[in-house]
Length: 544
Image (cartoon, rainbow, N blue to C red; front, side):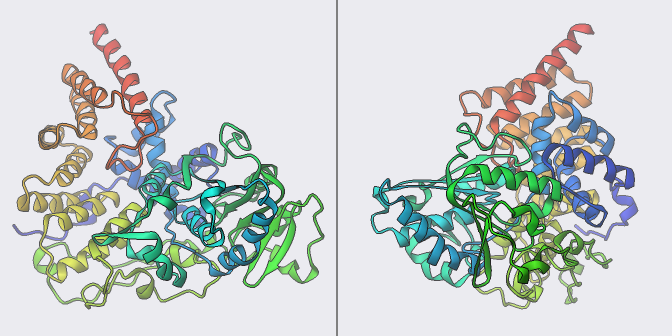
């Protein structure tokens, strides 16, 4: 089978004009406080396109209306929020702050709490769990009798997909970039193929939950966010306006007990929003303590409160225009140089360190040079897709194909990467090639069904989605997607039957569990949408 490079105009890529930018940015800001100024328009567009690709909407107008529907928007906005708030982190990130915690702050808290043997710590914006688990490991090093203590370590994030990964506590080599992480890995992790699973003793020290910092449900006993000894919220508020950040910081202050500590990222807003706190200067770290007796800001730190020209939003500009990748198997095998990419967000937010060369940072372009070493390229590609970096995932996968990879999982991931980018024709080609190699490639069938729907071919989309549920009758997303396809094809009885199948598969499953392969959709969210759609569609059927 021969592929030819597609003309972008023939890809039916949905437009994302300035009006789309305005309405989606307003919607996102109102729901979760995420601020996308004009110089971050490309980041908003990237996230919207990725979430839209996983929907069955025919255009951006329908998708926007779906997000506004108060009865059914939860599951769809959940996925959009996940696509917009993905942040890649690693264990013991920012050695300056970790050293300050290990050598000064945590020992002080331990001494203060030694009589009661209780500790309460909150990681707000915990992403995939590396930060709270790092704190748990630090405590195990500092407390020989750690099992005798009552320790609460809470990890929260708005991103449900990240919480799902955090609860699994299985990580790739990429999460162990810091020297302390490499040194302690054999102590706290067990090898699991190409990945590492956290030992149960550390894993059970941390609990996770979804929390939107824009909302007013903290501090509260219900959210378990009161009387905290330490709150960590690093590289989260850079995505908020200063007004929202000030409100969040005030809430953190109320969450902390007297003498409690707040740790934020280096690139946060002006220090003026932390005036309630006493400021402590450690080597390569500034931390904040609630003493109810804040000190004036030191004169020599005045410059820290001034606007910083190189703030994260200003740096997150659209990448430079690049030549399109070849998408033929013949071209993919050609010995051609990889194109240049823009600096990655992980580099920009690697606080306190000098920017490293991108090839050292991401390993995106070194697969074909044979220098990936112990990093599994397929695992890295999956991670890049999970972290919303579809361009980087595509680049790495293309390098793998050029180097001779001819496996269905590689092609299926390429199909997913191109679908996230709205390149329907390219996604279709790679999905079909994956299916040619493996007739049971469920992921490729599912992506292909969504792509065909976006292309307007509902009949074939239905046929392909039926193969999804044939391969795995327990795949709830297949039944749910098939219901939408039937409904859009005016096959209401079949649509209701597929919804019934999806709902039965969710019976008895707790609402807070995550649906595999869904991008972080919770059972409760999907169940609510299914019930609402059943009510609407049955009412429509009664009117016919």
